[in-house]
Each structure stands twice: as structure tokens, then as C-alpha cells.
Image (cartoon, rainbow, N blue to C red; front, side):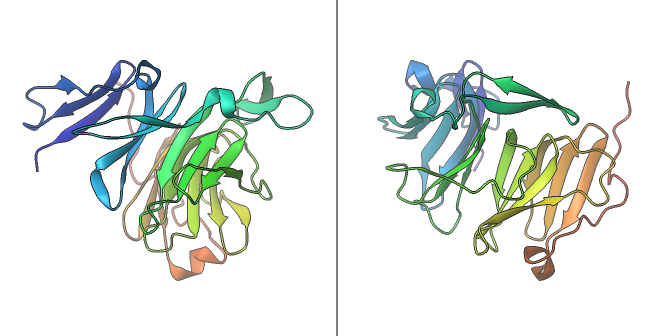
Length: 231
């Protein structure tokens, strides 16, 4: 209780007194530019750190840190280039794949999802091997954020430049959740037990997660649950 972790462009920081004092956690230089991090569900000292140069795993107290995936090991899709969306209506080709998002299955600690600039990869053996998920139904390959549904781990949600996409592992396909959204670009996602929250250019939207959404999801909010005003 009281311990906070903070990922920054200068590394992973820890505070044991609710933010009064901070200390830099020793990590490899390649892991210093933190994009995201997540905890192993069965060991809270074991942390996965996604950085600009790769994905690393280590123990907060003792280390050492081990690389699980690097940008150099990412394979560019056939025909040479990767689609990167700069806005909802324009796509530009990117010369090299990038790592963008990370999620850990809360019920299967060895299963991780990795967002890249050309889709989503998954490992079921704690990073020893990786396979790309299907792109069927996925309208944008630029992944901003990934969340695994804690109550239904076969469901994965992705924030993309063209909306929220849900992946059904049982059907091995994606479905876009756009009904009720005033904008398609989604920058971030958060989830509680029954609710998915989406941060967009026009505010925060709510999506209720029910048993029906795993079969035919629809956005539940017609208006933002909270609209931020410019100051």
C-alpha cells in the first residue's frame, strides 16, 4: 500500500510514500523510454516494461531484466511497408514497425498481447514465441492501447485511430465498436468489471460490458459521460 510506479521517457520510477519521494528503478538503457508497463498477475514484483526499443521483464526488487521482444525482431509485413494512421481519414506508410501497447492476461500469466504499428501479437509462453493475431475486422493497424477483459479473457479491446476494436479469441476475429461515438480516434482505454471507458478527442465515452457484448457488442453511450472544457 502506498507504492506507486510511474513510467516516463527517462525510465521507470517508484515511490513508497504515495509520491512524496521518487527513485529510479535500475533497468537496461534500452528499457528507459517507457511506453507502458504491466504487472504479472501471479507475482506483483514481476513487471513487464514496454519501451521504444523493446519489451522487457524483470523483478522490481532484484532484477535482472530480460528482453522478450525488440523492435529489431519485429517482422515487417509482406510488400514492405506498414500502414500508420495519422488521422481517421488518412493513412500514411511507415518504414518500420513500432511497439505501441501492452496487456497481460489476468488469468493466464504467460499470455501477453503486444500492440504494434501493424496490428497485435500474442504470446502464450511468456514471450518465448510470438504470433500475430488475425487482422480480420480490424480497420486500423495502429494500436494505441490494449485491455484484456478480466471477466472474459478471450475478449481483448484495442484503442485505434478508427475507434475501439474488440477481439474475440473464440471466433478469432475483430469487430469495431463505433455506434454512439462522435469521433473515431481513441487515445486510451480503461476498464472496470462491467464498463469500458474510452478517451477520445471529444471527451470520455462509456461502453457497458455485458454477456451480449461478447457476441454482438454495441456502444452504449450516445453522448460523452464527461466533456472536458478548454480553459
